[in-house]
Amino acid sequence: MEKNEVLGLMGPPSASFRFSGRDRWIYRFYDRDQKFVKEVHFSEGKAVYVGEEFQAPLEFQAATVDLANEKRELELAEAEAKHRDSLKQSYKEYQQRSKLEDKVRYLPYFKPIR
Image 1 (cartoon, one colour):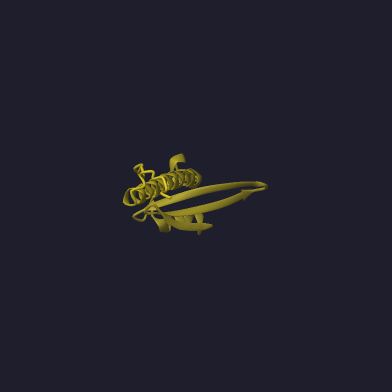
Image 2 (image 1 turned 135 degrees about the horizontal axis):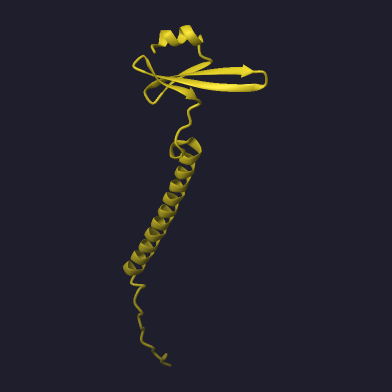
């Protein structure tokens, strides 16, 4: 069906938006206390999906993506902290070598003369 045919049959949608290259129209109906939600998806002006409210696959849902992003941010923060610590240690070792503190030096012992 074309968009104008859907409008003629169903009327204007309750909500509409564009997602993943498709126009999505959402119709909400109420029968007494029960709510029904139907969606119509259009691609290039023709209906390609008519049915229940569309749910994205689990791996693409916002909560799943947010959880994966938080985990990745935590891993990056830990890697950054380890790298920072190794740089501090390397700098400390460099300072010791440059001041010759990394080697034990013996000074001769002299008895004072009177």
